Length: 205
Image 1: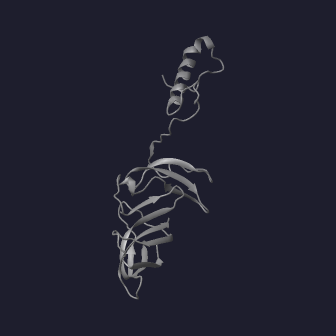
Image 2: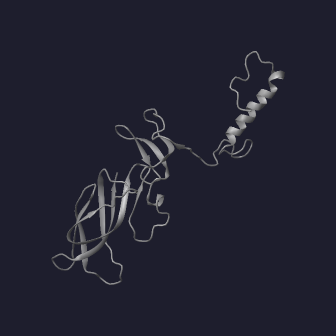
Image 3: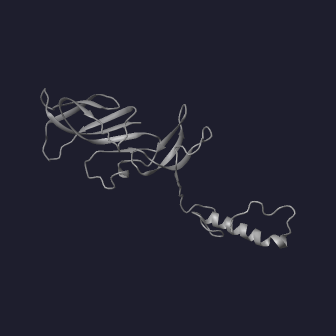
């Protein structure tokens, strides 16, 4: 039987309502036992794990101002169910797909390949390999399953050499936007352009 919120009523006789009360206690026990440690154990009252059904909207409700909440929602970029954080920032609340990353669409990325990840704070990071020869524009990866930066706050670049020898090359960063970066690939010991391989890490949101 299902839980009956109308049991007991003020006029109920306990001897006659015993079955209804027992049914309600069993329904409560069934509710508590979902994802929780059992009654009368050392861990009673604690979650064994937290399981969240997928919501049909993001956010699923209008949360009270200033509240932080977690929920599951089908992310339109990764096409996977992701854990979302309802986060209050300076002026409003924003919905952050905190578990969305390259691992949502590629369970085993190879070494030295590009990727991306959200952080629970809302920060978005992208990294990868690129090449430059003199003044070169390098676009940040964007695809149906890769989000676009709204803004980029920092980019780090470093030379990358797959071999053991000295390539005598250098890469420098000049400017960047949410779409990509301008770099210059040059010789380290002479003036002028040179083919340079490098890695980058871009941080934004």
